[in-house]
Amino acid sequence: MSRLNPRVDISVKTALSLIPNPGEAIGMLVGTAQYGPINEVLTFGDLTSVLETFQEDRNDNTTITKAAEIFFANGGGVLKVLRVASGDAANATLQLAGAGSTANVITIDAKYKGVYGNQFMIDIDTQGSGRIARVKIGDIIELFDNNGASNGYETNADLVAALNTSRFITATSNSVNLVDSTVTFTQLSGGNDGSTVLTNATYTTAFDDLISNDDWDFLIIPNSKQASSVEDNDAFHTAILAKIENRAAQYKKYSIFVSGVSLNETIATTQARTTTGERFVLCSPGIQHVSRVTGNIENLDGTYFACCVAGQACNLDETGQSITRKNIVATDLIVDTTTNKKYYTNIEIEQLLSARTVVGSKISNALKYARGVTRAASITNIYFELSVLRIVDRIRMIIQDTLDDYLGEPNSTITRERMAAVVNGILENSKNQGVLDSYNPTVVTQGISPDSTNVAISIKPIFATNFIDVVINVN
Image (cartoon, rainbow, N blue to C red; front, side):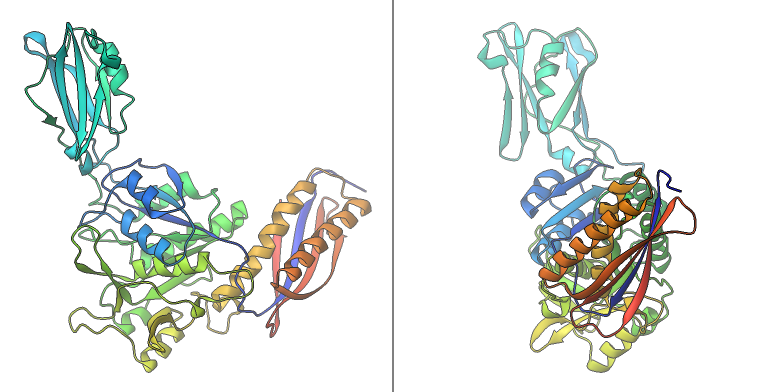
């Protein structure tokens, strides 16, 4: 008997391979900044656009700009960015008085929360019987003069409407008493980044509310360097990994969390970390980076090395490269800042690989990755190799998205034959791209219940060594 709304169960057999997913993957960066929208996901294709939105990182606890710089420098092409902040984040503000010293006839606020807004300045001048305004940040001045009208803006409402077209500030009219002119440019104050008390919940809530059902492949959360930072913490990694795994189960969106060790972390401490799962990549050591603000070399922990790894992984080509063929783009690596040790020895590399860690070192006189691995439960796990997981994910996601189009159709022989033909077409295309060496014809059968369908796929990526089984549920 045929029924509507079939459930599709896909069993995939695939061989071990060092082949990454074809096509450019998308990075997701969650971090802090001194300006820009909070709790809003934006998409960027270059560092310049990131800078225009979030401004430069300060030297303490802002992360977005330098993390994006490292990601793009290492080949990443598409980066989604989410700025998070704690509850004490605040807009810089200024209250303008009216004629006769009437208090607060217009309130000026920086467009976004953060200390960057404290640099904004505003000047109100008289023009005829009205007012004109100038907003200044650095060498940039915005002029609001009512298109040169002889009397400027004659009401607060009209002036406020003009000011609300500014790139930098917003304005609110609180009184009909016309705003008075100012003696000179007056600076806004009170802007706060609000990034000194971030907790696990800050990030897990943002994950649930804003990015769980978005499209992206690699998640990076760099260390905010707060007094008790969480981003490089084992417990934090476990909490975010749980979100990644739930995202895969609930939304059928398969992604990987890439993070790193603390600055100066010992190998013994790394070996003692407990976060385990094939969708988590732990990176070591830290990196050295030239600050865009001061021009000095700053030592950054493994969460920034993770930005290198994510950028490289997002830019792997379609013919089978692994990140071991890529050079790490960084000023240098740093293992221990107290002794200025920069690189691991061969023995230390083997120890860290056994601890399921992506290791960077100087290899053949270049900064390279020893191996691209995940935190799978065991180094014998089929998904210990990062690129194995990515190729299976890629094939699975394409099939998943395609078979979703069949939900609602009768679970009949004809429908199942059509599904098999479409899946075989996907596999043939993957073979033509050099991702698969071969595949067996897809077999589609009715499941245990009449409203379910089983799709059995057997694929062999190039350089295959042995086979594994994967089950996908399409609901």
